[in-house]
Image (cartoon, rainbow, N blue to C red; front, side, top):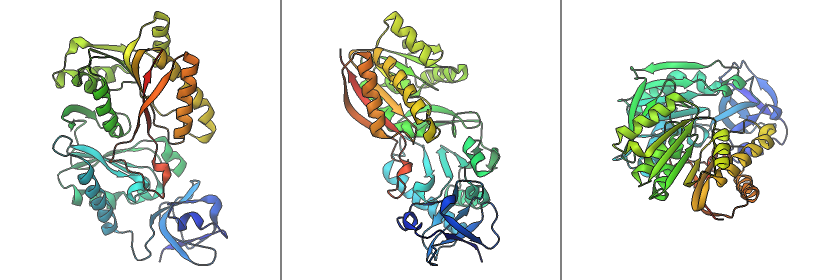
Length: 396
């Protein structure tokens, strides 16, 4: 018999709308023995069953709902079904003949709160970021081995958000013998992913579609790729016919891998420049030098960690976009992104508009971009929408 969570009066509305979170302020009482990560049933103050989820006593999100079906137990079969449903969607939206890497589980949007699973060719990289996900590690790995029997499994639960759950960072192999580096195929481009030391789970699969659009716009253009990481935007640009690319990043190892990607894809190394430097400083230098490009890509790391930091982050986004706009030749293009879930799309557009005003340039939005289709957003959990991108033409 699982423990029970009883809600405060009139706090069941969000669960009835199938939002998968129960906040600490909504909890009136806990009945039965309830340890971190345990599966609990959630009831309204009137005794109505609302959902079954994972208990997290140290988090402001006290329960994350696994299922809204009272007849569905959270057992091995539960995780197999979730993975099979997710795999079915990926087979529908991706072309596996030219792409062998994808996000298999996008946490709440795929019915597994706190779980992220990225598949890189023959390696599945798992992040378990909530108390419930951590508790169910063995079942999740067992289910992965059932659904993807040819994949080894590696854990990258080394994200700060685990601290909010009262959890320590965890990394290491969970099944098979994953290599440190694996080569993947994305839209027929060859990319090396460092699953042990790379950002996030090793790579940014969510920008797959944006990279393809960058390749389309890059034809016959000089391209500046800011926060370039391992240079995959630039590979798409060169493959699309760019006349030159300049990668700017603070990591020597990332820039080294960016150069390797150019060679790996038989692209012209003489068209590539690697700049190790802080993007803000480099853009200011280019402005002082009046150096401009026909296309500028701004794909910075997440600036917004909390609602309290939104104003500070907005100033950072405005500053970087103003100098990015300065760096675009008249008639050229700016591809600018925010991967911060707490940054509203309308505010991001306003920030870019204000940056254009400060730069004294006219900017036209010609396309809006978002996370790739293997990063779905379930309608009951709008927080799953996080990546915003704009392709803009920059005029005088």
